[in-house]
Image 1 (cartoon, rainbow, N blue to C red):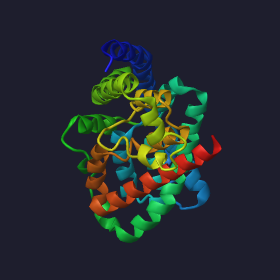
Image 2 (cartoon, rainbow, N blue to C red; image 1 turned 45 degrees about the vertical axis):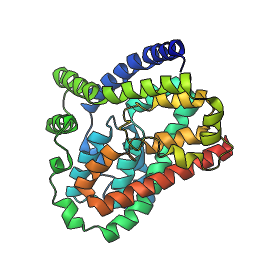
Image 3 (cartoon, rainbow, N blue to C red; image 1 turned 180 degrees about the vertical axis):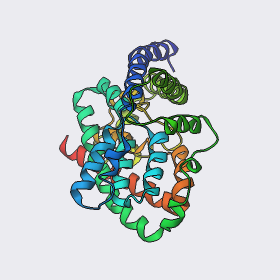
Image 4 (spheres, helix red, strand yellow; image 1 turned 135 degrees about the horizontal axis):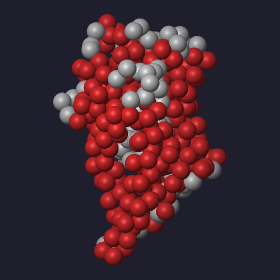
Length: 307
């Protein structure tokens, strides 16, 4: 590996991504002060396509990531939310968030719009398929009786979730809480962002373009299925997948592969699976994550056919 090229790419990605990441997280922390669960509750009580589409749209614009969305979804389920709109809200919200969209602008407006539109479709389709299966295979009473904090592991993620849950939603902004939420979010996601930046620099400096084109390029029809699994060992949330996506695009990865990765990576990963299993159980988690992977991959295939 060319050490000088690696160092140059590491510096380039860091200067591009880190300032925007901090800004995006601060904006999301401020916006979260105005979030009202009452608005969400209106659209998770019926399975009509309109309600599911609205729930998906609200989820995609909510300034929360996986560690915040799952406890919120668990809380809504305890209030008798229906599975299908609830999963639409959760799935679209994890695939797209305000910090993720802001950071994705580094990849261009087209990719950003595709990420948002794909997240809406992703949430809608996953909700109907996974929701239909889960509501027939998972004991609803077992899910609803679990306390919202039971889904949090004893880690910094739990600290972040508890902080968010304690806050009085739709209240006058409290800048102290905004700053605390900002700090907790940065502390939680910074290691994964750094990992993504380092991985992106390694790919740019050491991995051949022909290898990426063969594995993840347009000529490989299965590339989105591979892309949707890239985030499996990691916790790429809050736009932490953007540096990695930028490096892969630079080496010839197809647009559909990148969209599949961005849709699936925040959900289809081991840390999120652990969090979900505390709420949905092992069977429900396997069903949900399998459907997420498959739908994200098929969306990626469709994007490749169009673009």
